Image 1 (spheres, rainbow, N blue to C red):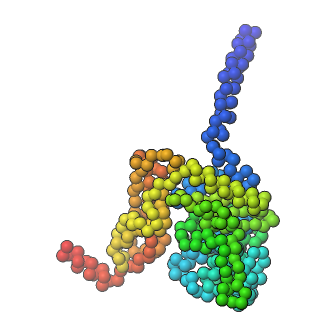
Image 2 (image 1 turned 90 degrees about the horizontal axis):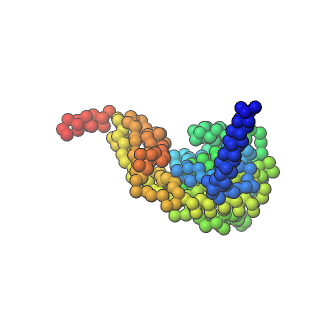
Length: 392
């Protein structure tokens, strides 16, 4: 009996000791989360990310596979911008709308079969008016058919490590086996923003197509934040009855660029308000510490048997780390680790990494790609180099 009483007493004592700990834990959770705990309450899925470093500030069901609606066009625009960069197309090139492209429903710029527009105008039609017809016209221009272009979209998704994404078309119209996640959309948005000229389109509030015709077509950006939120300059809205109201938005203040993605919002007002609150939180709580700005020289890499013996590495986009406001930065340093290269080298080929440290702690690792292609040197150039080496 005494043993039983002693066990009961010890159990009661243990429970009493545990209760304050449990109560303390419940009080600490909101404090740790800060106001971020209340972000995007109406969204089915959401994420808040620093564009330069890819650091996730907040997420909610961010890996749920959901219909992305017209946010799909972020990947479409990414492939277009890459094609411009590698010289496959130019902004002044003409794009002819096929009968199939012109038949797209939903949001459109009302392309007529056979109508021609420049790549520049087609991008405006996609970025501002969410033109489904313009998206298909560009897909056909770049890949021959929409199906072949979609294969390139899925290939790019794999390259970016997107595990919750599969595309079945280039515009986001409802169809089977077409899905993405807030996380994956943020990653592809970040990749698109590396092409800094894209915000010249997505940041416009209004413009015109067919300016010289008798009936100019007025474009108004479906993303109203670019007009009403300071620093907002993109990226893409989306809506279908299945997906509800979606948005991948970006805003920049000083050197800090933020990406906010929400999916499954009940209406545009709630969607815009919640994204604005996400931005407010990020800009109030965080700062960025710049390592390299776009265009800054980063170093040089030797190329064995290359048409050029050495290639300068220039920052194609900003490199920075995200820090809480007030964090000391005096002990932040970086190392550029480049791999030995042998020609030929292809533009975009991984060639090393940029590692950022705070003291001895690694803050962030960035992949570094070749900024240009380098062919193999001809025999005469190799011969000249070998002779030069004899007299140095």
